[in-house]
Amino acid sequence: MFIVSSCVDTEEYDNSPQGNFEALWQIIDERYCFFDYKQHEYGLDWQNIYNIYNVRAKGDLDSQQLFEVLTDMLAELRDGHVNLGTAFDYGRYWKWHEDYPSNFSDTIQRRYLGTDYRIAAGVTYRILDDNIGYIYYGSFTNGIGEGNLDEVIKHFAFCNGLIFDIRGNGGGDLTNAEKLAARFCSEKTLVGYMQHKTGKGHSNFSEMEAQYIEPSSRLRWYKPVVILTNREVFSAANEFVKYMKCMPTVKVVGDRTGGGSGLPFNATLPNGWTVRFSACPMYDRNRQQTEFGIEPDYYVALSEADYVKGEDTLIEFARKLLVE
Image 1 (cartoon, rainbow, N blue to C red):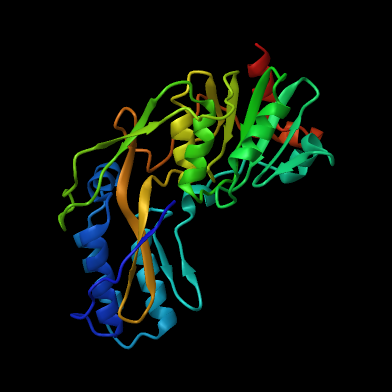
Image 2 (cartoon, rainbow, N blue to C red):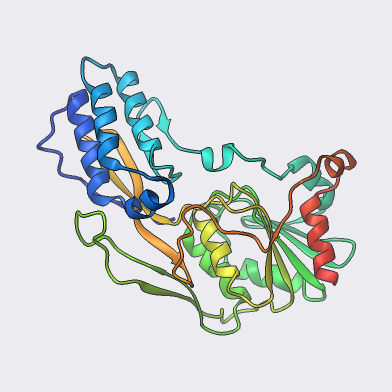
């Protein structure tokens, strides 16, 4: 997603372990956007987190020890958009997908793609033998042009349906998600809402601002579509699923997405380390949070029996769904 950067005023904190701890805690306290939601979901108490980690931050810590304390504290937010950047490591919280099966095998996928698949910028695609189109888009950091999309849609013109596989897509450029969703949209469609932080309090937000997807002026696809998801679908890819669930011909198959619905913001600590965190919350069209993921229409997992046979359970389920 688009990341906002800022030089946070850290003059009141010195460049010491305690000073950097205090600066980080306050940056998050004043600017992080999911405190109320996460307090409700699992009892997050940011003041209590301060009390716990303040003890660990005291003393003559070296850089590695300080990094461990600060990343452990940030992990209490359970947010994949919260990261601590240093010259020697990158603090992250990835349990949103590491604690779950991937439900995806690139070895098996190659059996479906073969060797004569097509490549258009960030996507690979081909027509399967039952006249179902298959597209794989592994990362929205890889852009795709309008001309590319025209060619892909033309290639699938006589197909009965389309499988759009975004398993493993950890996000990237949100404009790619919007550009894609517009190709499946027949009219201006409400897809969600977002808010902006308006003050330092945990509940200080603007009114909800509606998000819309408008139909592309280029070629569009109105036949049935199945989106394949797993827990690694995150950030801009999570938003793409949110958009596509608003389209009448689309079904989502697989696992709950990984979430990541806050627009990231960057700040800097006194020692030069950078912290990224969620600053602007986004919601679905029913004004519900998607920070912890989006439910599929059909929960389907990659089965061991199918794996042994070299079949992808999710792709096979989608193919049957599209011919019903």
